Image (cartoon, rainbow, N blue to C red; front, top):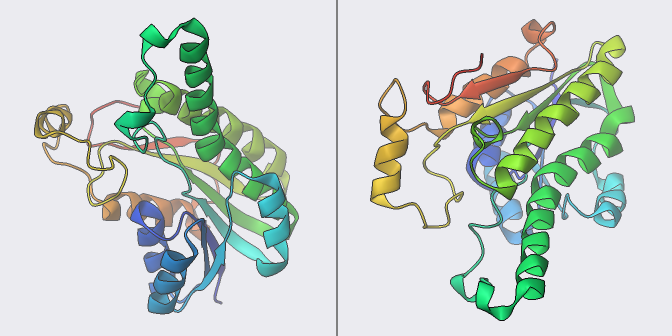
Length: 250
């Protein structure tokens, strides 16, 4: 029987790779994101449905509900990223501008990462909660930064995702709905670094792994696919690292 899968952030990177996997499996796939043109192109390529909206905006999520499926088997929350890396140098605030400007900028940056990574997952999942079938699967993309203490506001946001996942797993568990986090390390072939990953930093991240290689989107997709499978029904509330051993989950 074909399953219905909703992938947020499905226009690029890990989200797109997940959408490709589920479409290839024969699932009915709905991809969401903010870039309508990109989503439309990807949906046409995959035979999926595109629904464009900002997942961190409560009003936008509510307005999109009429376009989203009424019965859902899998939700994959991929929307997000380190919003600090998407900022241009021109938007950086110097301490010389004064403590008020500096603190205002810090608050703006922290809220941006929280909205992009936490609220996007929370709002979409809560909005679709009653549409999830029994035995449905929720998989949210976290990050190694949520455990290593790196990444500033981004790492803190991904740590919050882990705490929220435990809560949603507990509340939906009686319906045999599972919720888990997949936490990647360095994954290439995505827009994550916005061209700001230096060769030196890439080398150090690879050297930190046991496997001595960078991760690829397919590495993450394989884990997402397993957690979304019927056979993973007794795994819930967990954080599964995909980082080549760069950080151990223990």
